Length: 321
Image (tube, rainbow, N blue to C red; front, side, top):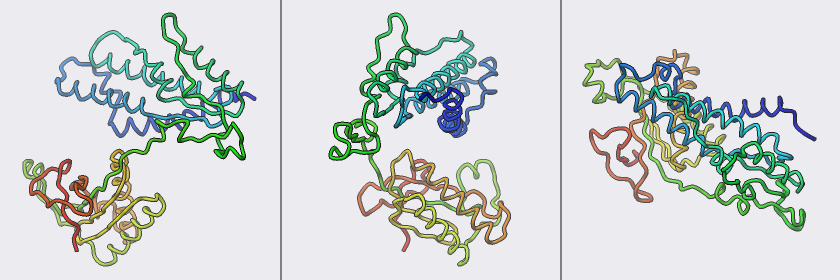
């Protein structure tokens, strides 16, 4: 059986495509900003736009796309097409901001070796998948890609040799680079309510604080229940949690790259739930500001807070009693 192209295209666009769209939004990549070119623009602006492209390319190369029943590679070929197109878009945007000719990066080899993985029970299908991927990218003078480490034969559902025999497939052993456990750290996260803190930037711009938000007992119950539900649903490793009148503390263990997404979800959903259940408008609590989320330096303890430290490098204060 061969999956029709329109189906694989739809799947890729609604999986890999959605991920890429979210990442571009996170990096604040706006095509119109690149279309303006470099004429009459500050060097810092050009540098920032270029850094966004570099960050996006590095992120693309960190993606892991797997088809656990890859067959002859229809889905993987479509994913390869999509990623090549994304990298060409980066080249196009970079050419626009620097006013240079369009030069496509020879990124195909990196995509095949770093992004594309497949498993299938049928040995012939595996060989066809490897061949089809290679033929799509074969060029005169280009070194052949060794896809044996990326496209493998085995039973992707069973790792017990007594059940699956020689086709038993142990994911950790077959793809050790992908399944290597990343380092986790303990993070002390502190968020503050709207208007409850005064930053240096606000002082510099002569901003006058409005009435600060203050949690009452009912607010604390709502937010605590909401955080609890998120922790259970997402299986977060939260060691301690404490909510005070105008801020809350969370001691969380996770990978560093997971931190921004987790913090954003905890803040936004708890604020929305509190506003909804109390009948407030969305402006009532505002967007909680992360005062700092630095890793704990010593297990079980944390250094004292440093007055005037910035959110990105704020030291960790002990959890309140």
